[in-house]
Amino acid sequence: MNAGSKLPRWNLSSIYSSFDAPEYLRDKDLLAEQAQKLLDLLQQPWPEDKDQSARLVLTWIHSYEDASDLAENLEAYASAIYTTDTRNSRALNEINSLETLALPLGKAAVILRTRLAERADLVLNLAETNEQLKAYKFFLSDALTRAKYQMAPELEDLANDLNRSGGDAWSRLQEAISSTVSALWDPATGEKKTVIALRDLAHNRDRTIRERAYKAELTAWDSMKIPLAASLNGVKGFAITVDKRRGWQSALDKAAYQSRISRKTLDALISVMEGSLPLFRRYLKAKARILGVDRCAFYDLFAPVGTASRTWTWEESRDFIIDKFSAFDPGMGNFARHAFTFSWIDAEGREGKIGGAYCTDFPLAKESRILCNFEGSFDSVTTVAHELGHAWHHEVLKDLPGTLAAYPMTLAETASTFAETIILEEALKTASREERLSLIEGNLKDACQIIVDILSRFYFERAVFEKREQGELSPEEFCSLMKEAQLATYGDGLDPELLHPYMWAVKSHYYSPALAFYNFPYAFGQLFAYGLYAQAREKGPAFAETYKEILRLTGRASAEDVGKAAGFDLEGPSFWQNGINLIQERVIELESLLNTLEEEKK
Image (cartoon, rainbow, N blue to C red; front, side, top):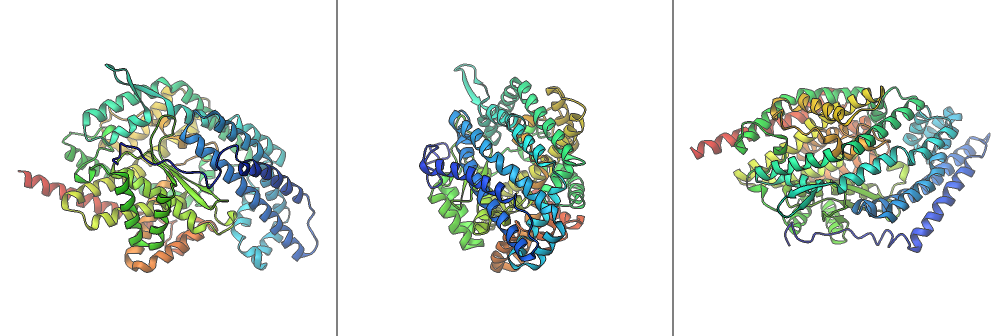
């Protein structure tokens, strides 16, 4: 088999066999029952006795966990069906049905926080003194904080209900458009390609094909700019209105809170990213030399170089990942083997399937599934490793209750990037000089996306929030803001006439009403993962167990406290700069290898 032949689709039968399966229908009924049970329990008055109060709080928590696990399992299944075929009307109907079923659970979560806030001092005391509640200390403290940023229960209930036909509906519109919109590829035959297929061609060795795909992609996005602009305006407008009602000063404050980082940590991270921009422009100029062009265009960012740009088969990718994971931790390698063997990965690109990649968790089955669009590049190999890093994170936490295993994006991306780093570092150990150049360039290409492109997305979204408060933006205004953000970050590293003004249409991350600034967590994850990997190299095989302990802490602590457990101070710039220093070493080595190869060719 090669990368272009039949690739695996995931098997969901161990979750549910279909939407009509008795188990699926039973769990839908059970979700309604559990949500109502929780609502009834939350009506109970506070006991006078401290021990009885502790038992009541535990009852609330356990009931909330039971209902939440059911909701997550059902919603993940419906979403998995839908994202592999956005034309599946039954899947869309099920998503809508589950959103309706989950409304009482959303209401219960609000009431739970309200009830806990009624006796905040008692709750905090119980979290310190009661043996069973000690494990829930972070969850309870977080619930009390969230209680300060929520409306009255009846208004939260209304907001959640309206979101189904508001923010979430706009988000689904973008998903549907981006998974199906296409452009003419071959005028002679009338062949069309979806934007997903066109974006895959950014990895093609032939620059004329990359340029052609880039132009066709821009044409496709331009044809859909009006509904996509309406979608983005709808999502951001909805979020601004609701967030203000909840008391947030800004979407960025909320995003930092959701990421479990302080604004001091975020500011330190962003400032170091900004300071690294000249370094990445050096890298892009080196890449232009490799490609034999005066300056890189946007469509050159993913261009393959060197011998490591060969096409990988699915079997080669599978064996490589299993082998390299096993070198770090045999348990992690065995887990990856299980995921491949039991069809946890949907790798085949096809019409109707969304672009990109993700990992989803099924708490009842205690399993994960991975969606990707494998096209045979080394990038595809690292994408699979990245998503398996998420799945390993889930695996390490799967025995914990849901409230102790819920971690933020920042720490999620740490686990996935750590897995990517394992793959690269192991590959470099046996690489020839030319392979090394290709692998290092590939690593820098990814780092450029995670630092430079992410910073451009951060700038863009910050500007959108500022302007959206004043009114809706036109497609042209979105394009202008995106180009400004790309010029501010890529600078003279890219041809200013060949940027990508429609990246706001490409990235589904902008279209989540609940998660704004779905960008900086990737940069956080990369640099935090580099810090962890430095420790892994220093401590050797023993670090595998330490790493699992760190992952198990991610659902029960702030990012800063997880950092402290690993020996890092995340609120200071020096930690983040250490990660950039590793990237600098890579840039210097790339330039050195390139100079040597150029000299040999003279």
